[in-house]
Length: 210
Image 1 (cartoon, rainbow, N blue to C red):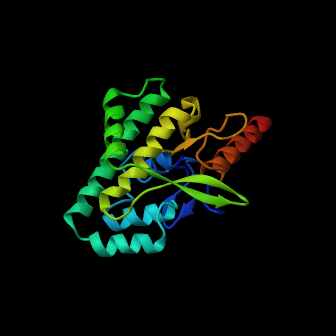
Image 2: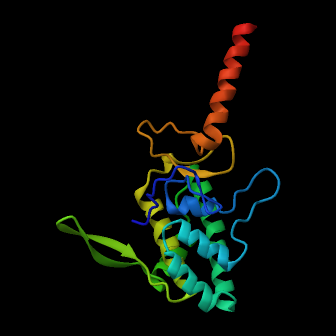
Image 3: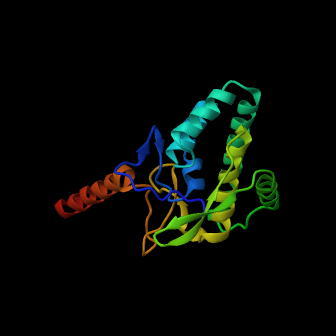
């Protein structure tokens, strides 16, 4: 399904965080909500296109074409607003899902509507000496960008163990725990993991001295 599997030396790509191990969770993290004010990383259509490119959903050429044709249009603005509205609806759903609440009927209906109006497509790709199928989406119009977002969200709710979808215990970022033991509690070793381990080590040293 639509998952971001690229391996990077950094959790950041072009100003966006990619540590959720799932496209939907990385999309949620484009508006991290700390204790004070939410931080909006998608202020305009151009930023949305940059995120899709960083997520591996658009090539640089495809993003540039969409920006050139639609960048200042009302349709682009409506698409941005629709994507952000979907993101916040998914945030509420996933927070509830993490507390063992089933997917809400309204979210299921909304995802079904989006997938019907903006479907993902399938094509054959050569892989070694054989063939594989690959999902892709049309990107001729701004609204087409909703296709991988809706498909990815449906995949998350159907295919993943909700006990492994969680929010970092030390910050505000969401992630899918893909570790073997399923004991990951922080968003990233580079961000919060090291801080937690250093703090735990310091606490142990204080206890030894007391």
